[in-house]
Length: 154
Image (cartoon, rainbow, N blue to C red; front, side, top):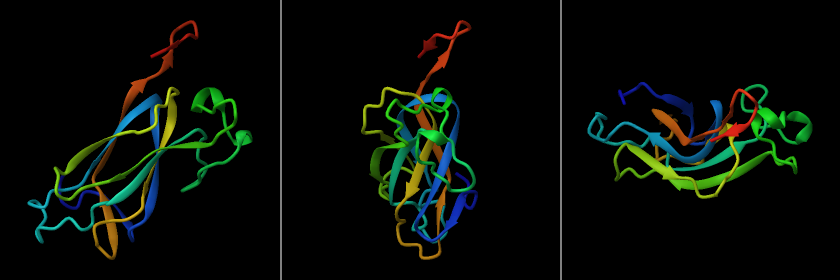
C-alpha cells in the first residue's frame, strides 16, 4: 500500500457498503493498512482497530442506507431469505498493529447463501483523533451463479 492512497474518513467510526460484482458466499475478509516502516512517524494510529462485517440482503439506496424489510428487496438477485431478514453479522474483529499490514479474518457464521453486498463497519481506530484510513478491503468466498438453463452452481 502506498502511503496516503487510502479511503480516509473523518473520525474513528464509519461504514462502507461494498457491492460485489456477482453473488458470493463470503468466507473471509482482508483489510490492509500501510506498515509502520512505510509511515514517517513510525505509527499506524489511523489504522482501523475494531470493526464488524455484515452481509446485506437488500440493495442500498443512497449513501449509507442499509435497507430494512422485504418490500425493499429483490430476493432472487440480492439474497433475501424467506423470512425477509435484512442483514446478518458475520463477525467482530480487531486489526492488530503488531501483525503484518495485510490481515485476513475468517468469517465466523456459517452462511450457506450468496450475497451481493457486504458492510464493513469501523468501530474505532488506533488513536488518530482526526481520521481513519483503509488502504484495501478484499472479500473472499465462493462465487454462486446460474448456468444457461437457470440452475444454481457454486
